[in-house]
Length: 94
Image (tube, rainbow, N blue to C red; front, side, top):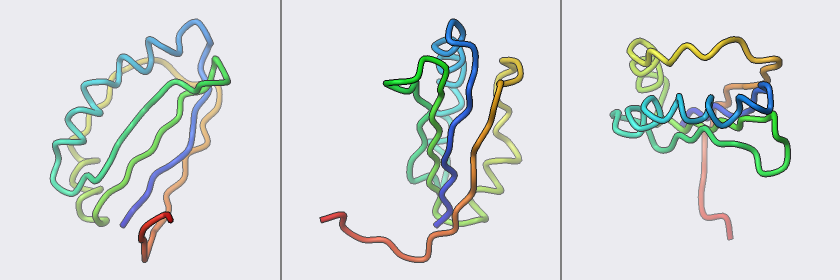
């Protein structure tokens, strides 16, 4: 399982427009083979922060998605901190 998680910072007055611009990409990703979950959301505390989480079945599914993703052009974020994590196990939270 591959997890992509992190955030980016954009101008506060542009944050909601950035999130909205990615709605179609998130919808397409969720419909893609191997996508377990994807969300790009406005942070509930920081007005500049956009949170990202992607969970993919495996590297092949992620790589296939990356080849066709074609995200919208929304400008350059002020800061990006997004990392890839390779998970080997998972189970119930509680």
